[in-house]
Image (cartoon, rainbow, N blue to C red; front, side, top):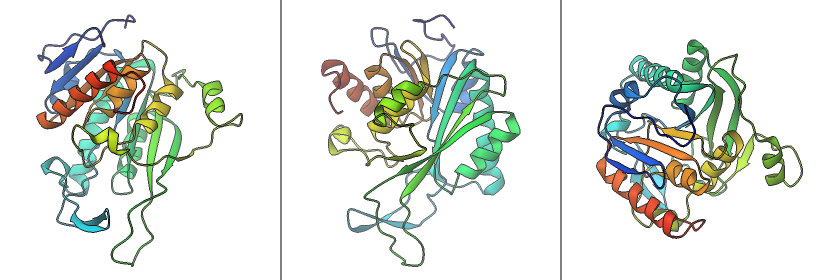
Length: 270
């Protein structure tokens, strides 16, 4: 796809700003993704449902709270969850450019299904990144190790892809050494949630590193599970183009406010 142009699809955008090269769609990714042209996206970042909203509890800020995040996070059973992962990953693979890559984040509840689906579809898995959270919430039952990591899988479209890896930039961030696949990054700061909260919001620092590692200025980045728009903010900050898809209008409104804030105050936390 020609640099500087965003894919045009039949579904009407919920929000678009040509000056920022940002387009947001309100809807299910399985309805929007099929409208995107083949090979039109340089990189995908996806934070799909973890399928944890089934009546459990967790600890947040020292308090016992429900783990339920919304109907979009309810499990469909092992086979149903895997079928869903296969379906959206296949669409992402189709829209990726021949040398494009995809990043998927998740916990043990879903990431193994994602990894298996990637193998079934012929992606080339490049790395598994362990994101270590230094101040993770305690385990309330005291019957398990405290969950303090998430996994990011980084994969190329297929075995023939010549993926982008900005090695020298990563080495610079690692203070002159090769960057390892263990990333210690704190959760989102309070200023990143000033327009509203998303239950699985990722820190801006994490997305900036992902984009710096595997894209170039002007590339088109897609997030099929936009959430509150952290991927979009990182893309805008780093001069990448962005397409986000989100089922919940509330989170799209938060995204727009964050994008406007970034446009007004480039490089500031939003």
